[in-house]
Length: 95
Figure 1 (cartoon, rainbow, N blue to C red):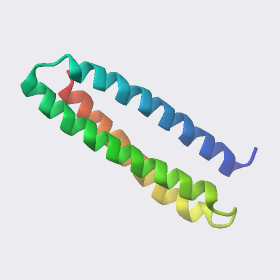
Figure 2: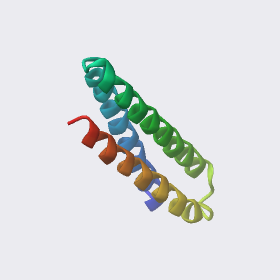
Figure 3: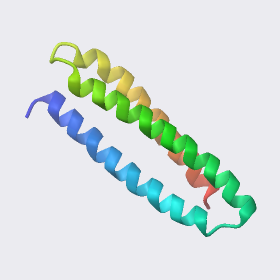
């Protein structure tokens, strides 16, 4: 398996984990008080936007040829970092 393919597989696994985490946070948000639910919904929306952005980067990376993928890798890494940051922020609100 090429370095590019391994990178893509790791990203796919991360997206699967994030989807599961978003689902778990949604379940917790439904159990919260009305006031807290509003804040949780904002966090969840931000997570979904970041996830969608990360998914879009992954799609671009998958379509890129071998020569172009290294250029796209930087943007993908940045999208993944924004996603990790959004999860850290949301997790702090869900405590």
